[in-house]
Image 1 (cartoon, rainbow over the protein chains, first blue to last red):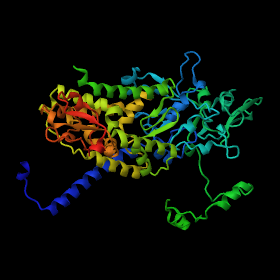
Image 2: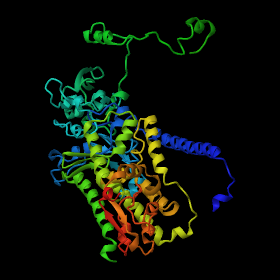
Image 3: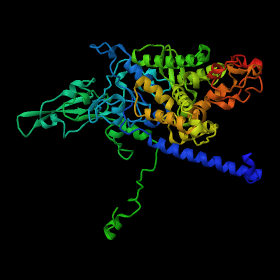
Amino acid sequence: MSNEKKPEISSRRRFFTDVAHHGGLAAMGVLLWGGFATKAKSSPLTLRPPAALPEEDFLNTCIKCGLCSEACRVRPQNIDKESGKFKEPTLKMAKANDNVTTGTPYFKPVDRREATLVDTLLYGHIRGEVIENGVPCYMCEDIPCVPACPTGALDITKVTNSKTGELDFKMMDMGLAVVDTNSCIAYWGIQCDACYRACPLLDDAIKLVYDRNSRTGKHAFLKPEVNMDTCTGCGLCEVACVTEKPAIYVLPREVALGKPGDHYVKGWDKKDQQRVKDRVQTDVTTHNKRSEKSPEDYLNKGLEF
Amino acid sequence: MKWSNIKYLILRRVVQLGLLFLYFAGNYWGWNILRGDLSSSMLFGKMPLSDPFAILQMFAAGASVATTALLGAVAIALIYGVIGGRAFCSWVCPVNMVTDAAALLRRKLYIDKIERKVWISRNLRYYMIIIALIVSAITGLTAFEIISPITILNRGVIFGFGAGLGLLVAIFLFDLFVVKNGWCGHICPLGGVHSIIGKFALLSVNHTSENCTLCMKCKEVCPEVQVLNMIGKRSEIVSKIECTNCGRCIDVCNDDALNFSILNLAKK
């Protein structure tokens, strides 16, 4: 027996060695796996299906079953009239090369990218060929994707009107459209209202603001402006935009929006005053590197902050 | 080749491919038989079925899971726990086809004869379960689900393949060149979970040692060879929990020394 060649060790020593051995291996596993998992979190620019929980909660609650994506694809309204087949669904299940946590549903209204090696190997795309497979959310009135979710990662209460108890597609909240006013040709003075007309919440989520064109003195600007309260982030505007790279595009709300915090209150707005009354009173004094120093130091000693 | 020598193998492939086809058809043509994937499905649009291990990781990661998925997990645990044992691994899981292919090629190429032995504990899978739950708790992600080759292959068939296919090739190569039955028989934590779930299941393989001629064909094909420790010695059921009830040993046995038994409890 090969065991006999090994030096004898006491059972006590064996126990401690075993504990160290197993503990060490487990620690190695946790470190390697945990390191990978941390990297595997989605890009913060990922758009999630309607009524998705906040990203952190969504990531641990989504079971990656694809029932939302199937509900999105398999419906009579999604049949291509020419071929009679189902069209590509809005909701895609993330693949390992999508920069989104593998297996989770997401969508991209416009997805234009060059073919990579993976596309070549798997689907025969020529390297460098432009692949377009973005699909916006068409904001179905019956919102089929949300009730399909078995785990509650898509939270149906977020799109249920509390008064009527019915699903309300206007309560969807996938993201927020943002206009790049430098690239938007309507802001140049060229007439374009493509996004305005494409918007499912016409004249609500995107409004045209009329402005005088002082350069010509006799023309008008018809500038699209997004209503941050009602825009759902469906992306139909992004698809409709005529510029080479869309000048209006959808970002997740957490990315697109700032937060004024509790220091600032709209004194003229009853709702906002209520917000301040409801808040849990915390220390409102600013504490940061800068506040630790006195303003005189800046003046007297020339300290930089 | 006689039918009796490949009966369960063919049946298993029919079940595995049939399920994949139903999943695919659910998404592609909208058949309402089996929707979703192996993580969570809807049978006939009514009956939820969910992977209990995925649910465990979700809890570890801090999720509050809706009842539909919980019921689905209970359903799966009951189906395998009462009837099938670890049958998921050999009758349902699509990765089984990949690793079986590697094992077959391994035998044909005589790789066992030339390779330097790499030893991994067969209990690694149980540690993998614990580590998966710890990593889930630390990162807030379902640790195994984001890398699981099972769902990557399964989703690939349903929704289209991506770079995750590389992982399956890696597992094939690992099983072929590094460790025999390396993935399914040593590492996969889902296999570990199904081993534990199936501990008291009714279905098991029964050995009649009086009929055994000690040809050892069963041990050659068994992916969990340690469960066949009674071959030729004692007439008893295969009671070790890692047996996947694949029936391959029954297939290759020409002496009627191995059979399925569904009265596990009665024989005990």
